[in-house]
Image (cartoon, rainbow, N blue to C red; front, side):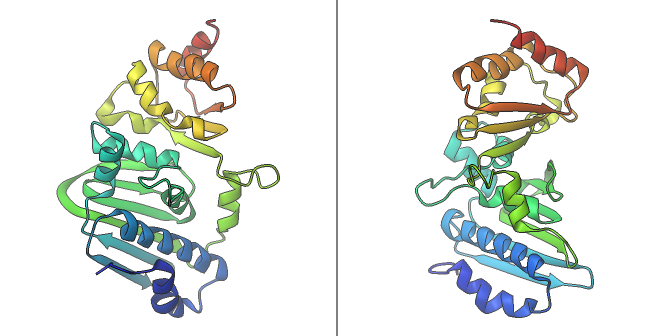
Length: 265
């Protein structure tokens, strides 16, 4: 039962003693991911059950946190009024999303998914998988898995430093807060959907104004429509000149369309 549980107490009492021989940087990553994911279950899942699994072998350390609640993608869909739970993964990719902004910053999953070598979320008929500080992938599951399961893996000899990942999305000298994000635009292409409309663009740029820099990764996006590009690279940038949009991995067609709308006054 997860009533009255505290994630830091669970860590120090039940998990930390089992990791005495683990490198300090790896242990720090595990503590961060464990406490963030357990706290999500306690505060957001609406579940009465919390299941935690820890396994350590010769090469890897694995942590799995499961609940029987509403499901993370369904929770985000309901909170934001999205049409499909698949759209929820885009909001997780942006970061700074939380259904309880008074008590949470919305950074936990964003950073946890980037500090572990492998990060997976299973919930109902969707599965998200990420590999370290790279963009993740969304898959459909044939079976309906209740609640949410988060699986995290890291190599025991990993050199990952939690602070370095934090600093990558902040400026420790000027603005130590989480102010930069990277968005894999490919996540918008549900089932091969083309990126053509202003409505699609508005879903993408939702909450961009919470950041000072947004990196749009167009890997595996071969083309975009004029209305989609115009809403992002002319309308949004004119309304929010303080938000710096950076594009990477753009195809020739995507680059040309962006230049076309940016040249429009």
